[in-house]
Amino acid sequence: MTQEATEISGYHAHVYYDPDTKEVAGRVREGLGDRFDVVLGRWHDVPVGPHPKAMYQVAFAPDEFAKVVPWLLLNREGLDILIHPSTGEHVGDHRDRSLWLGTRLPLRLGKLN
Image (cartoon, rainbow, N blue to C red; front, top):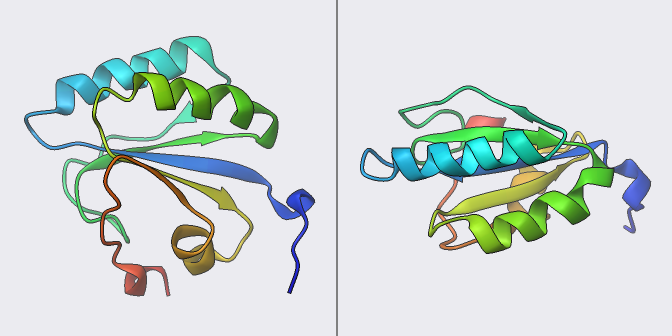
């Protein structure tokens, strides 16, 4: 089944960190908030939902993708980041239609059902 890009209502970037890299994650977060039209989610210092480690979410509109993602490519400071579209099909968005910067982490997809 072919899907159209117009079915993407936005994007999420999940920036993963641990206690040793939380300060680095803070710098990346500050950079995103200062430069782009994004919604910065809460810090989650423990795994939540399908995410296997601490993270925060960054939500942004489709027209911000071409600005946010290249910046993350150049400025992620070694952090692992999941980027996925929001189409309303959560498992597929996280599993099949995702981009990873850094190491691909094993998601707990059963938490999305």
